[in-house]
Length: 285
Ligand code: NAP
Image (cartoon, rainbow, N blue to C red):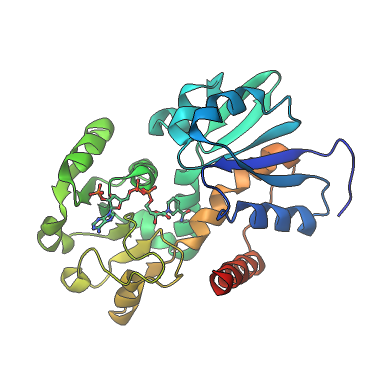
């Protein structure tokens, strides 16, 4: 990779942030495209984040990614926001436009591109069920609403949280408890797990898939493991599926292009590289 003293520097900030796969992802692209630049971990405590947000340009950064717990704080502290960040109330990507610090949100874009890659027929769907009502669910609802679904059921353990989310999105969303799943499942064209159930060694399923119709597309935004218990059960039933790794990879594309001036691609080689990084981290933890 070429190097230059004034090469662009980008970051990922969160607290904690050491587990982030973003440095491996962006460094792969920098090497792959022979670009000068760096992408660095910036662990920032919540009480120091507001200061970091205003001062990162002086530290020599051209922008970066924002992750938990800073996404909502970043939303409130910027000079300008892109339309998706405004719709979601959270920011995951920062860049500079002149002396302005601008924030965007690429999670919904990542979700959409991943389904377009793996199950392009998802766009024919009309009814979706989303499990979960946390930060990630917000991006998923936005993506599915933007794709033109006519009915979006948001099911959550804490139904008040789903009701709150749905009230922000309005038609065509409805909130339900998780035990409404069996009654709704038959009409779903798309099922999304946006809960944190199923991560790592947790083989728990939020719901049983036996009541889904025979053509329902099933996707899980969790990508460790790549085949979650939910995707495993869907494949056993012969349903079309999409894993969650592509969402992570695609959401990184717009930021890389803004910071380093080149639009990278999500390829099988990149997927394999990140899967190796995940496996190596699992072996050392
Ligand atoms: P979050 O804000 O903490 O929300 C967690 C959600 O999971 C809530 O709806 C919560 O329900 C539900 N949940 C947790 N434990 C549960 C249980 N035992 N039973 C039923 N429901 C349970 O998290 P998030 O930021 O939305 O992230 C959710 C998942 O998406 C995480 O695993 C994250 O790694 C993944 N993610 C992936 C990508 C990607 O690029 N692929 C991007 C973002 C997030 P309550 O409201 O009732 O607590």
